[in-house]
Length: 325
Image (cartoon, rainbow, N blue to C red; front, top):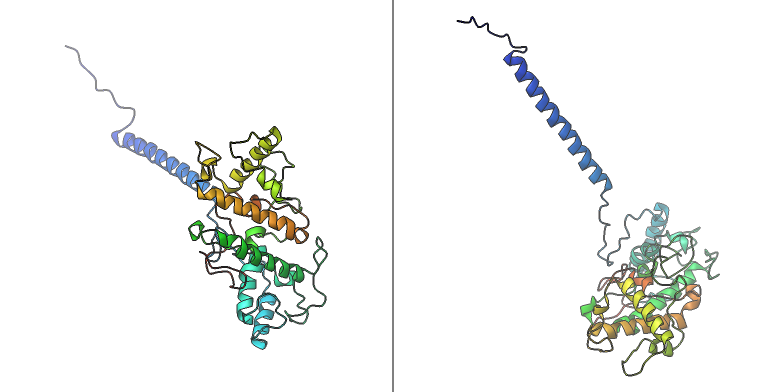
């Protein structure tokens, strides 16, 4: 018989338990730290959606840090002293408080500028016409230019946008529609130059612009399928349609019957023609106040079917708006 000797374990059961427990705890703690770090990275990298305004489509005039407290105080004082407006040339039929609300929400809010951008408030007089800040591009007082642009939006709303059915959205043009929070560079590109064409409108040539000088330029786009267009007309059509799809963020079938492109059965094709006619009207009538730059579809739409910065129904003063049909 053999005399077996009991082997003494290197670690006691308690020690082994503590070691296993510690290892598991370490793994859990490390995993928790990694999870927290990952979540923090996701949160830090997350861009919250921009605040929207009940006034505008996909555009916010908040936070209103561009408005100086002293300007708002001067406005409040002016409203108290002059409940009925003085020297109003465009916004007729509105009292001073209504005009002030419009100016803050849609003019200052559309350009994201302070009242002093257009007004000389040395004496707190919003009606003043002397020593006004000047536009360095158009070389006229900014207040004068603002009036001209209000009349332009009135014209466009009542004579072009009003032709669109309410099913399109019943939206109206306001300052933010074109400026989109930029006082001069209303397309939002860098460099401070007034331009309506994005630098990244690939694959179009960098110098591409819509032809808007005459009705014949729009006729170039009306391919009927009955007459063979020349190659130059085909290329211009391709460029223009590429610009339209990028500007509105849509495909060709948004406006066309994809089985037969010359067909006019889709209403969007008619609406697009109306908007091109509006762009031609802007080019012919308002180019001086637009610093001689050519308008484009991108100028307002910026990749969206409904232009960001367009006003929701009932938000534009009656004198500048229209009644959706």
